[in-house]
Image (cartoon, rainbow, N blue to C red; front, side, top):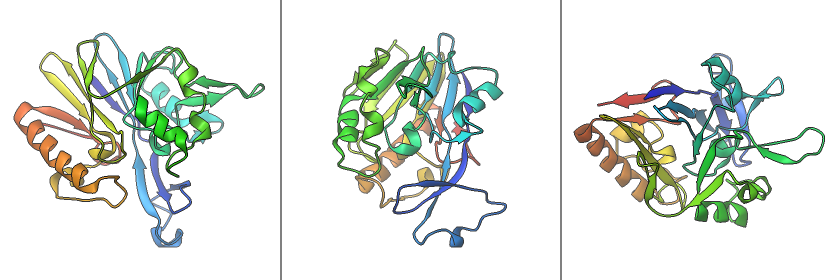
Length: 246
């Protein structure tokens, strides 16, 4: 498998849940609103023998009218129409903002990756549409289930015999994680339950997780399994260390 980090850069977010671009060479965190968190955004493209797989879809941030994730994919020699599978860990704005675009004239929604089968946890979508959490854009997801290319999945299972998914429920109530296996290679994507290298190495409990203790315990469990079973772990919120391989 070939792995391509698709870094969208750094952003800050405060209580308004609005992501603001942050340039570490120019901007100062103390100049942002009180309580602002610094967040790095990094989806991944994984090229297997049979598929071009996108792991989460980024923030949906545009540059010069073009979605940044599309520009990033183009920069490595692929296009949005080449993607055959989109695997979603969860539907928070910084992970799902690149799922849907709207036609300039009709405002009709369409999938950013039109040829890809999208795998989304059913209950995660229902929760996102419920309006129960400000971390989701309820209106953004109102049309998602109507697309033929969206497959709603539940619990634990497999996709095409080489992708395993498992509901993990640490960061969000219905968060899910994925393993991609090809030959001797195993790639693990833990979304926001394995977001950064440093969090995997420490007993870090995040206040922004739905179940911080569970997320911490899962990180410890996966770290040990990764060492023992020689996984590659991908980090969505760590652009300095996109991955680690054992």
